[in-house]
Length: 237
Image (cartoon, rainbow, N blue to C red):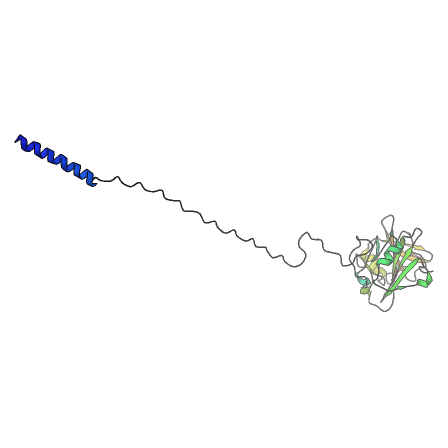
């Protein structure tokens, strides 16, 4: 019996050796190969789009003045339309008191110049219903500017003050526009006046030779702006 057991043990050992040699032993589990991370596809860069700019001047953009003259501070006006000209202490429309006469005449081309009786120191211009004159004082600067009412045009085509007074208006209109305004007389010519201390605006009344003779129905035929306290009796003479 012992012989049988020994024979079986020998046979089992031989079988195990055969199995090992024939490769019937379980193989180790395969090691997983590393998985490559998915690569990122670069996203497309958006193309910038421009916002359309509205037509016309934008906020903060200076708007050019309709009229460029020798003095850039001149208010806008239409050179050919005296009805757009302002009368104030600086002057009348295109002409400024205290600035060179030659420079201003050269810059103003709105109306044709006349010879004002051949006086070289006066630049005068005619428009329907209006006569404008600039007078040169010593030194070459404009010392006086005047606007007069003439026939052939409506009052609206004449220069005006900020209060709306034009040559050809009545004394009553002047008194209503400037309550308390004073009058004076010089060289038999009465006028109402305004002053800032250095410049005078005179509203010269037609046919009135004294302050006492002034009447609300009288007509202001001439308005002057200048460094003279009184309006001159003659412009071209």
